[in-house]
Image (cartoon, rainbow, N blue to C red; front, side, top):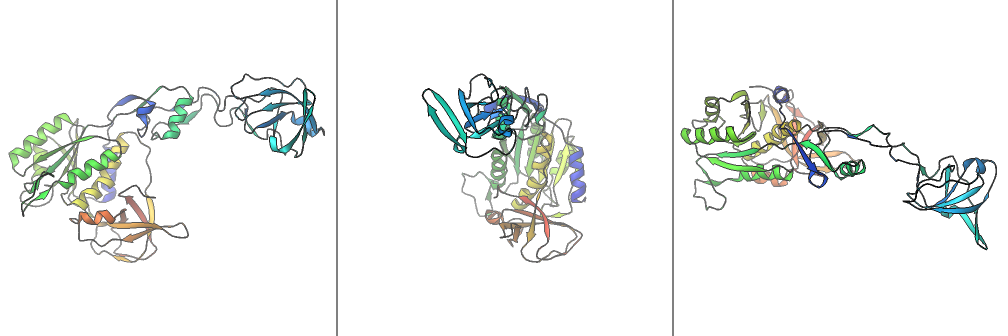
Length: 404
């Protein structure tokens, strides 16, 4: 049996990518970027007017001039004009190119307008404080050739806007793996069936499928009973056809928990089986040359925890996603856990008036109590080195649901 830290190291060392896909910007939201987005010109590409107002030469203001004739109007989308001389003004609109020779913009509300026949003048009511005031200077955000979005970033609408701004009609993203979810066990029946007293419905598979779909990945569901021949045939086919297999059940120490031996017979190299943690101790991780297998315990809380803590993080890393750090939350009450195991405590989260993330322990009824997950926001990771955890201690929390 290995520690949680050792399991992390093994998973990281055996990460594998699934190729690159080229998608349109509309298709790429939520995917992981497989190339940097590089500025094809300065950002902004010109001195951009940041306020409706009047463009002036800062030197004229410094020299004491307070009244200017308005000689032109510069709207957004118009080619740049120039100040004919230092002592005049150009009316400008937000987003317009700053006229050549102008070095400051005075807001509309900071001037008084005067009309003398066909001529217009402004008188400054408020003096600008510095050169380039109300001007978004060329290249101040990014210079041409500079990376704006690094490879490995998940594409949100903000990154899509950048891609569009640099003329990317399509982007290269990391391809999604082909994923199979397998439930095992003679006691499991279809969701649509009415179970007999000794049977239960296949809720684990539906739950894991929901996790993946919520994160933009598709998968297919399969089931096999406990018979060795049926299980052998099921996994033999899936190992040929899928990049990732996530199974639940048949990995503990019972007489019918035969999946580890079946996988080894099929040529799967088992990198670890059993992690010093609760819940989820019997988890198995193995690989062939083309397929990665995560065999999770059948108890639903164990399956959820192992998926969140290990499987999903591995999939994110395999897709090139930037490594994210877990949140930390403080216990709202003391917890005692005697076994020398890492304890993943189900918690409900809240935020204190001091903006501290708080974790309220949820007792539940063990790793089979999936109804308790309805009230759970995540799992607080309590280290194996301690047995008593006091109120106010902060530990990593692995989110079960999107939480804010």
